[in-house]
Length: 374
Image (cartoon, rainbow, N blue to C red; front, side, top):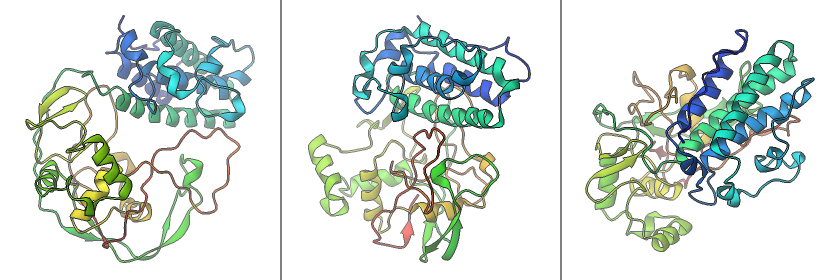
């Protein structure tokens, strides 16, 4: 069977549009998948699409709905199957074995989602301010899993190949960043994960960031110059990984000049930002370019003046690719190359609320230069 998008058309009109939009988008992302597609686990560190669909519903059921009078739990067994890392919620099915969950079926998981969404809609008018904050946390958490769902389900192609407008490649320049004491971290109001607070001062040495992202053409030059064959550019663990796995190019490149994406194989655009590279590769490229990766504080300082509502977002199902190169100027901003480490602001304290695994943040690379390619 094919997953279908649950319209939630009969829900109460006072339900926040954001909650319904987030829930519907997750289902739309999974719509091209069969039950078998949604069950398979591509690697031990990834999760099946069916698990993402269920876990995000488990979050709302566990932290919001179980305190709602007369709420009926959909299936008590799901509390074990779809918990992730929440120690206080009891034992859980190991992540490395999530691909062995053949039941419940995708159809039943989608029914679970509908049950939870309708219950949230019914409960919304009577929810306390604290419970409504948990709903917002649940929406942020589900948006993280939307990204994971697309990452974990990259093959086979999920959507028909569409037209990708060609990008122009401007000459890269260095933009001086702020230096000295700079305030970073979340400044209320608005949502933030606990690791993003409190706002605090950091010292930034003089530095500069590249005015555009690293392109496929830039990466071709790195490869042609022996970037994957020269150990001096690599961290020791990175070089061991290159040797062990036979890495010669970004993960979804082929030798004929094409690149695989969510809409299948297409010719690689030399002007497009390079994608699907690891921290090891990003660090090696920066070393080869005579620079380093930006620190979290440098990146946050540079992005502080940007409008967060004008970035690139996952607004609907379909192939995802960068719109352009801009951070400084009129084009839309994009995130830099970054590793998957998470850091916390000094002075941050453990939260009593459930804390989903917050999104990755930038970590410092080797300080071989004060310039940072993005």
